[in-house]
Every structure is written in structure tokens, then in C-alpha cells.
Length: 368
Image (cartoon, rainbow, N blue to C red):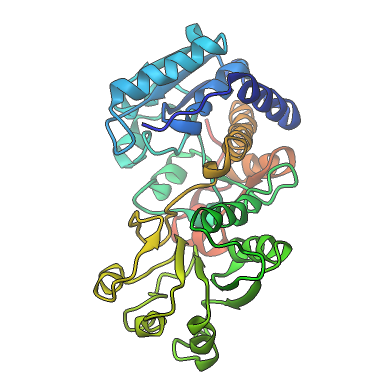
């Protein structure tokens, strides 16, 4: 099971984030997860921000047993003086749905399915601890939430106090150095788009590498001979594609794996669809070795330290706080969203998402 120490620094980072986001959860009950490593911080943040009640659910997982993770969370709660204000439990999250105000979408709370939504009280809100474009149907029944008048909003990770994507580049840099790739003067092929690629490119440029950037988009060309020539002299290939779902390495649409034969390049895989079986056939390996589905990361930003998780989850709780207080005024979903966007680092859903999941059928209905 992953662990972190340095209680003094973690407490300082939490206090700083609570102050910067003006997080005040007094009178608000929170349902979140108890997790391992830096992800232990979410119930601690809620309790330190004055939550009326904090319920932290856990499960057996690849990261440890529910018993071990629960005890780890309790140890941290005792260290920070909030043990009496956090209930750690292995019971299913939905069993607490009717008694809480603010629900987070974190792993051990999910799925927030139709059964879960049906049990939520009329005062409940759901805060996503990531951006709304990362929404997955299997995580939350968004249509059921909006039909019941449950506001759901994401957290804007480009908010000036957050800048979460900066850490993606630092994760890539750390992995390269751990793989004995010096970065300085190294030939590195970067495959990715959007914020992930831009922040990674900035970090790599600052450290003096020779960089070629290939962006998976409508102009994607898996037979680009300029790329083929670069790969033959490459020290590393870094994949940081979070949006495109087609195969980027191997398979029918990806860069041909025979381009990598005898080139000696290290493959750093943060995210992006790749042909795992093809890699094995070509005797190629990647770091980290963990297999993930498209849209997931092999490592999250906590790999470089606890700050990005603390900041992001404090911001997500702030989004939830503003929604919860607005909900008590019986405002419509549209008015709740409007206030959250003004008073917190909230992020709404796209027009396409709103149409697909029935936002416009429910947005102007006053929540009672």
C-alpha cells in the first residue's frame, strides 16, 4: 500500500490550500473516500475545513485492503487532530447517500449510478475532482442527477491557484530521469495533445532536449517518414494523450512498432492508447509497466508529491461548498452553476454534454 509521511509539510500544504480557496465546510456533511498514498488527504481537508460530518468510504483494491487503508486514514486523522470528525467505513457509499450534502466522485465512492442517485437527499450536490470533459458514463448517471435536480460540476484544473497540468510535465521528467535518460541533449519524441502535451513540451524544452512533437488529431499520419527517421535516433518516446481514443503506438492506426526495432529508445507512457500485445511481440517494454484503458493515466500527478492532490481536492471541495450553499436557497440548476462559476474554480459541462444528458430539460426548474 502506498504511504506518505512528512506530516508537518502535508498539514502546511492543506492549510495553505484551504486559506487560498477560502474553503469553509461548516454545516456541510461530506461523503468522500479513504484512500492510500497522497489520496488520503481528501477527508482530512474536509474535516480541517470544518465539515459538519465527513464520511470516508474505502474498499479492497490493488492499492491495499480496506482494513489497511482505513487504518492508514485513521492514523493521519489522529496526526492532524481530526480523528473524532471523520467516520472511516468499508460500507458501500450509497448507504450514506440520504444523509450527506456534498458527494465527491472519487474512486471508492463510484459508481454514482441510478440506484445511488435515487437515494440522494434533495439537498445533495456532486463535485467532480477533475474537469468535466473527463466525464465517463460508467462513473456517474448524469441524466439521473439532473432529472432529480442534483447539480454536478467539474473542477477547472487550469485555475491560477491550481495549474494541475504543470505537474504532468514534471511526472514525465521524473520518469525519464529514473530511466537514465538525461533529457538535456536527448532526442525525445512527444506524442500528445492539449494541456498535457503543452505542459510536458514546456518542461522538456526547459531542460534542453531535442524535441519532436506529434499531435494526435484529424491530421494524424502514422506513416510520417520524418517521424520514422527521428525515432531511429531517439532516446525516448513520451506518450501523454488523454483525449484521442485511437491507437497511437502499434495496431492499425499507431506508429509502426518495427520503427522501434534496434533504436534503443525508452517508451514513457503516461496516457494514450497503445498496442500492449504488439509491444511484447517486438520485445519492447514501457515505463510504467501498468496497463490502462484510453483516458486513464498510468501514474497520476501525486507521483511528484502530495501538493497537486491537496490543491485539486481542496478546489473540488470548494466547488461543492458553493453548490451546497446555493442549493439551500432552492435555486435552479442553472443558477447554482452560475454562482459556482463565479465563486469557485468550477467548470460546467459542454453544450454537447448538456444536450445529451438532458440539462436543458431541468436547468431552469427550481430545486425544492
